[in-house]
Length: 114
Image 1: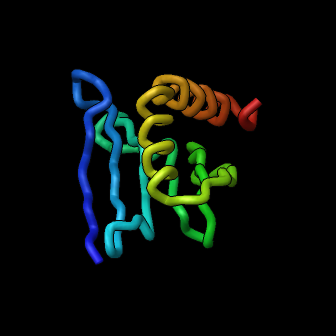
Image 2: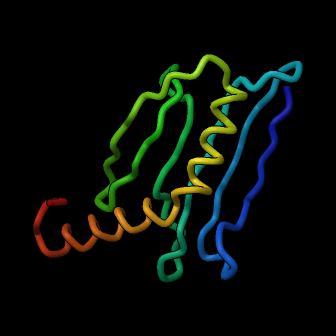
């Protein structure tokens, strides 16, 4: 088995990044984590994570107060799931960040994410 890990900058400033870790066995992906992180102050905040923990491929949308929303995604092969997760975050990280910041603002104002 071989594990590969890397960070990929999503913007020129380096304040938005993609964290990728996947494990292969005989050339086949058997485990993966693809996570979008944003630098907020001096802390890296995980905002969206794709993985196959719990026995299925899914996206966790992380919430400012520490919870998460889980969405199962049907994929037959983890190789396809890895590509899907990587591309989705590259294409939509701005939207994910906007939603996270909106929820953070609502939490501070006591609106409970409304």
